[in-house]
Image (tube, rainbow over all chains, first blue to last red):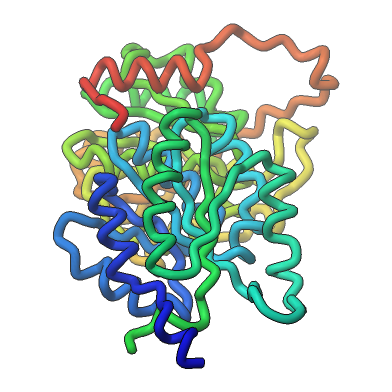
Length: 173
Length: 196
């Protein structure tokens, strides 16, 4: 447990990455595990948070923002990503614009057996959609957000960053 | 109910410089009426999501009036958008709904609870700043000038005569139209937008 707490993924690290990559809008459905991240994002005067009713909306709103010259990131949970299949297909992949999606990896664990089907199907879903992804567990991985941005811009495709520390480091300590 | 082509003809003189997006079978009539193709934008691609894409564009370009002609079948697929739009309070967004009470493009099957849903009432309760309902062209034509002057988000429900298509898709004649990508490039050139 001590080791786990020492290797946190801090919301501040994510917000710093957003700023570094000139993100203008976060299109999101908040969840309890990421509540502090939500609060922190709302505090940034350079960042607009767009709360949505359903995860599928996030990719369509992101498309509108991109077409309008802004830099959005979709922040949702893996369950919502799977619900968003047609929106990801039609409003992101087919549209051919760069987009980074930050996906809460509910149910994932590096240790033991994964019992949550939300986690079991997450990477399978991304493979099926042809979306590349990076795993982020601690602050040491935060720079992978920049890697995802570079790849998204180079390929004009969505790239996912899976947040594999939902249950430990995302709340205010 | 009134004809969507007539409705668009009544709207066109009051469009000014608005960015216009359309969806659904009724929306196809806009192509024949629009007098400023450079400000027509297509963000279709997933049924029920054009409305949220239009919201995204309105948020990105707050100084441009954004007008969406949505359809009730699409809205029923994404009813939560009413809360999403109302929450963001885009002053530059006017959300028209063309309600023909059916899926016209698949043969005219009724949408769930067709004819019995008060969409403007739902939008009002969701938090749209102003809402309107019309079931005839005369009242719509009398009101459209004022509607276009209202501060958004505005919701306008309209009962449209269905234009049902029964031909198999492969046999349907479609007039050439600009692709989504072409309209996006056109809008970005028109407004001087650079994709970041």
